[in-house]
Length: 329
Image 1 (cartoon, rainbow, N blue to C red):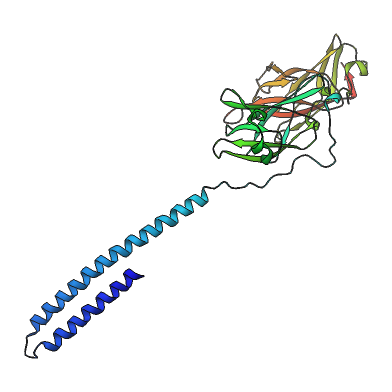
Image 2 (image 1 turned 135 degrees about the vertical axis):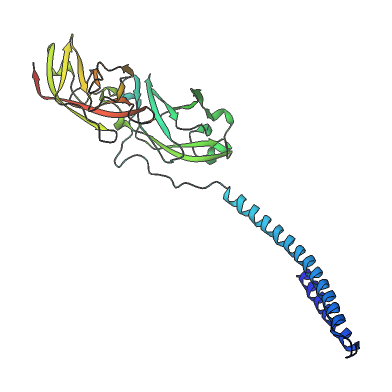
């Protein structure tokens, strides 16, 4: 404001000089000197105007830079992503003593879309459980079982580091119980900040063979003799577009069952059942696999790798073989 006032004062002074000069001049003077004098005053005014304008412009530029810097700083602050609900209504905690020792694929609910878990392996041994989570990114340096505030005040020895495999981060954490909400803090390498997360390891995603009390039937409980049987087969999971042929052929040899699975397309290049990888026996018109079946009349989980997308993807499916109307060949 002071500089603007000085600018106005200069204009008033210039106008006063013009007025005085005009009064002192005789009326007989030609118009040419007057034009010359007016041009001189106009040039002075323009010089003052340019000088003042330049200074005002500099001030405006400084204010603009300052405001832009403040805006950028504000926009760079971390944004809070609303948490998502995890688990399901009526879930009851499932402890290690209900499960058979072994390794199982398991689904994990995460309260944050920023904490993406691609797949998870649950290990049950000697009454204890651990879960190895394959992450969808590499942005987190540590995990801590507890809240973000607890993590910030804890000793670094309590932090859980990642292991790296094929440029992928894997965090292995102890699991007290399945179907139970677990507080888990994640430390962002970029933001250098702890973030609150909640996880639920889903017991309903486990194959029935993971439980000590098998829900379905086995070759033994059904009393299936060696031979070939046709059984109704159903598939769920994925996008819902895939299907398998039903009835399916189930062969029992030496008390062990193997099923022929015929997919609705030939784009599946392998399956994983009970941690074992199986290649197709045919891909001419459909992808055809022969895989072991340990439980009937209850769903079990498989992974099938599809090449139908731009990059191959493992997709989780659940299959049920029904023994109710099984027919021997």
